[in-house]
Length: 216
Image 1: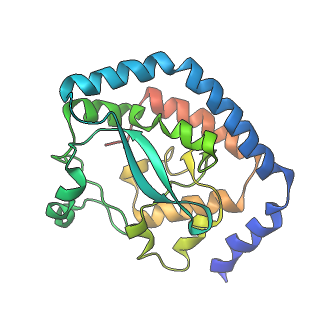
Image 2: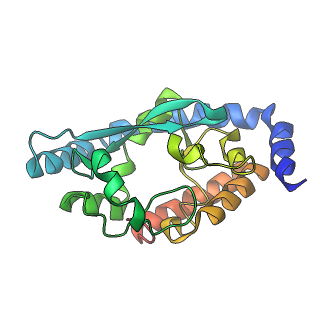
């Protein structure tokens, strides 16, 4: 019964103007942000290149979006170029429960990468994903295909809406929370979609950026 509750509540709101205008407004704000933040993008890119001139500045990774549709999500590179190939060595050291992998002192992360992650600046390129329509400014974290592969039917309700750059999980503790807690926060967001809630999350996001907590 609980499993269908979030689904039914979302279906009731899906036809409203809220979701359409949320995406449109997100794209406009993201385009403006790209212009304003372009000097910061250049500075971060330069810092990454200084550490390893041959390595790429950006990192793209397949993520799962609304209704299971996959897309490439972009970030500033924070790990060594061979990080994906090295993942298997560290899976047994996962520090978070459920269908996610997190490791506080992941040896694959570069020095500049640690700073970018701590301040969440590595996430900035996702603004381009919002412009493209793959993501929204606010919504559930887009999961990896290997994570979705072990999702229960209940967990998959996270995929009912377009994933976001920030959301309830990100402003409520982020990596300090368990996978189950993340799912519950996302479903709570889906069941209570509103401009008021989005504004509240956006304000909390700025606070989290100024006082980083739970990011690594």
